[in-house]
Length: 128
Image (cartoon, rainbow, N blue to C red):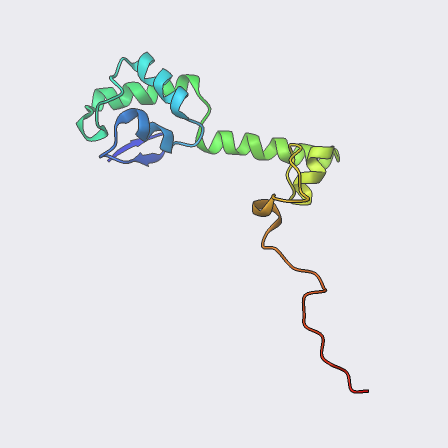
């Protein structure tokens, strides 16, 4: 297994897929990195030489912000929005969708498990 940017990428996968396991690298960025490093995307990670792995690492460290640095920047941006009480910051504080999605229906991932309110329990017959 190869280690790139502090992440162990799977050895059995093709390089262009394995690079997407690094936070901050998606399919397009992965293709761009491999083009700059002059490595075929279809090669399996286990077949890469140490020289090829170091070329990939050099391209990533020179051009792309990944892993801890990127996560710190994203967290800082969200914290800034919360501190200045921007609308998006308030949505983050309330743990609701921040990008205009509806919440009357859907948004279950953000809002959590559905809680039914009143009117569903059977009423006990009262003695008269």
